[in-house]
Length: 242
Image 1 (cartoon, rainbow, N blue to C red):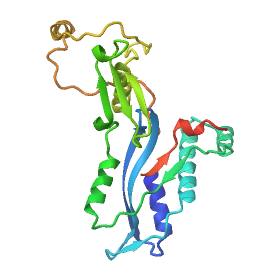
Image 2 (image 1 turned 90 degrees about the vertical axis):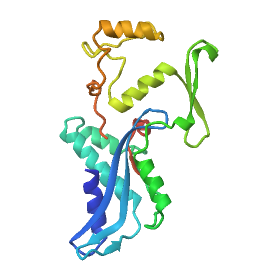
Image 3 (image 1 turned 45 degrees about the vertical axis):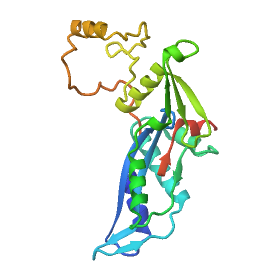
């Protein structure tokens, strides 16, 4: 869907009918603090490749056009899937903040190898940065509970997490599964103990027949699949104002 919008938009800016744009798109489902924030990262050619192998640069990107095109496709998809109806769409279109946002960074020239490398790394970046994370063990914490202190990308503020809550968020973002939801009954589980002794861990896992299992698939997802810096952003946080 996203690639179709890019292709249609770029082709409309080039007179030659037989042209091909280029793009590499990665789906992201998390924000700076592992919160649910679905968006797309994309590296997009600044124009189209012509049939003879030459390249024609497109005019400046119009953010409003891209936002409206992407909004239209997402709402159409949700309606087709039965998630929303015409009344909900009409209401959403009346919001002051649509919940859709497109960001376009500075153009990177072909000979800017460092810039291209940094952009590619950002496109497929991990869901958190180890350099911005500080672990506080339980014995050094004021309340005896292990903590994670995480600094925002802009370094303007920090957020403190219970270490186990941080791990739960991490598992949710990577495997799209809530580790505190029972895989059998879908009920909410709670932590009753935290085992740190390796001998006890081995005894428990051997009893469960899990000690000798080394390779396995990720857990089956039990939460809703996300819809999924040119950035298309339609997170819930932007839909708070009607």
